[in-house]
Amino acid sequence: MRLPRFITKLLPGFEVIDVKEWLQKGHVEIIVKKESADSPCLCSRCGHKLGASHGKYPLRLKAMPVFNLEAYICLWREKRWCPHCNKVRSEKLDFIAEETPHLTREYAWWLGRMCEFSPISNAAKFTGNTPMTLWRLDFARLKHMLQRYKIPSVKRISVDEVYARKRRYHAKESRDKRFFTVVCDLDTRRVIWVSESRGKEALDEFFKIIGPERCKSIQVVAGDQHDPYKASVKEHCPQADFVWDRFHLMQNFETALNEDRMWLHSKVATGELKRLTRSKFACLFLKRADKRTPEETRHIRDVMRENASFFALEIIKEGMFQVFESKDEVEARERFEELGKWIAQEKFYSLDKWWQNLNQGWDIFKNYFRHRVTSSLSEGMNNVIKTIKKRAYGYRNMSYFKLKILQVCGYLNSNYVPMDY
Image (tube, rainbow, N blue to C red; front, top):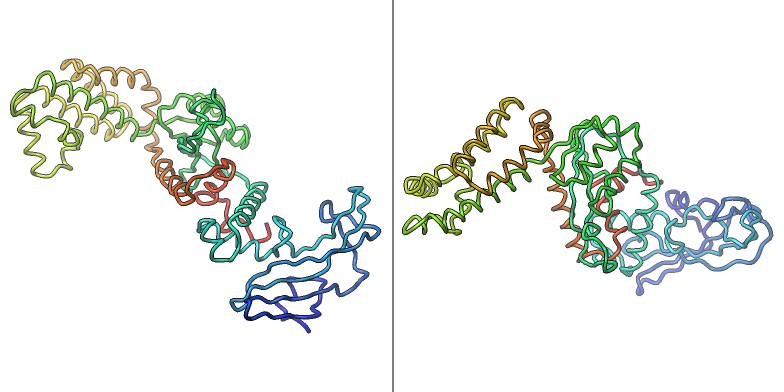
């Protein structure tokens, strides 16, 4: 009996001698043997020619399903002496998956492709395999693909941390070790590397992998006000501009603004004004004026008519939005200094402290007006990463978690790696 051409190409050097069907059990067995007994045998480990025979053993490989039937390929695999390994080794068969000796190469690739978009448990249930089998297959496949993975050349990157695990490996472990540092390419909008921890050594790992020559091509690095990231960029990419993310800057500004509002509410406001400025309406004082509804606008106007300090908070808040809308760093500096005068005049403690801290880092803050980039891409990727973790109900193996991030959000998948990886 002969198999169709498209199937025989998947079994080079073998011919079919029998086919057994169990339709009630839902599977079929294809029994094959070598076309020639004199064909050379190569070592499955080192690839060298094997010597004297040491017997053989039966092998049952699960292959791609055929008409909704599970298919198995049955054959005898020879064991011979390998003079290079100085051990008895099994012969090399090209159609056996590199990740496991129980599946064919094509079937293992198909299962791995399914694991790219489906949880392991669902893929195992659909294909009739155990979850542990698919987990080991996917993990081995990702590690194999990582060996061929090369970080693409980048000019503009975004760096941010994401919370990875709650469990501590030991009592003295730093909390920073429970985070991942995620590096994204702002041009291709893909994750290009993931390092464990959010310390300086995490970003140092990325720069050391790409090498000093490729570090010189990096022009912009966007991130939050995390000092270890800035120190790493300064050490490895001194020519690159580090840009603070607008979202994090505004988040710190809104925190300071809300603290001063709360102080005014507790110390200054009385009667109706105290009701209009309570925490229930906190979001109205942080909202941009042109984004408010007519009812919200009337509410804020009533508050400003009652107390001049709340009017000053509104002016300061709108002034901060105008700083980011400046056409260049010169105009931004003028508006920022004017903002500082308003804050000092009204003696807002939290806002003054925030302004002084940002003023000390003006050399970094001004880079935003040169490049107009943010780390919003990393923030969006963080949401995707959290979805990956929820889909799997958490990860115990952090190495596997990092590879899954590169698979879903980066280039470590079949869309970018050819089938013969």
